Length: 204
Image (cartoon, rainbow, N blue to C red; front, side, top):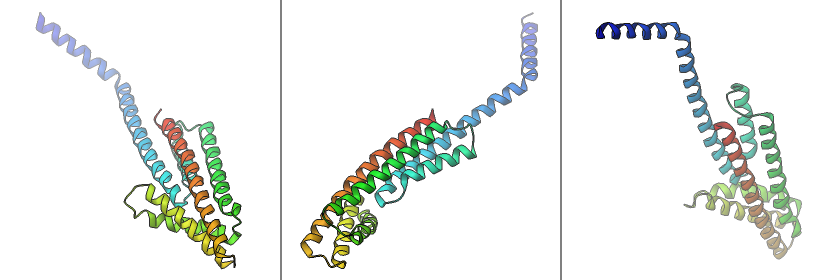
């Protein structure tokens, strides 16, 4: 009797499994889909961190974050929780970061009486200095120091090229370096907020 009851139970379990194969397939597909989304979210967050570091090199890191998030939402609609509100907030923060960085960076040199040529070369100098400063074995800090020194050198060269006296050119160069520092720090802060917002939207 016990053996007969066990065989009967096995037959019932087999029938239930065979009756609902689609349910099992859906559960398996859902599990695979969740895994893929998690992988995308991890890759997105890592890319955003790379873009965030790129801000130190005068790269449009905040805009790259918005672009990649928008492309993922377009490529995999519904997989990520990047609503129009989330993307709009991210784009708004990117605009804010650019405006603050530009205003602070340009104001430093111009406030000290630097020429337009000096302001332009300060931007070029900060880019070159940031790349060279990366060789300093202190992550982020070396790049930032190099960018500030590059802004100083670029502004100084620009003013001397424009025929300004040496000491006023030094003063404008110092202003460009200070402006570059605070502009970069502000943009890094904005970029960090964007990284957190997009990561939360991707994972949750």
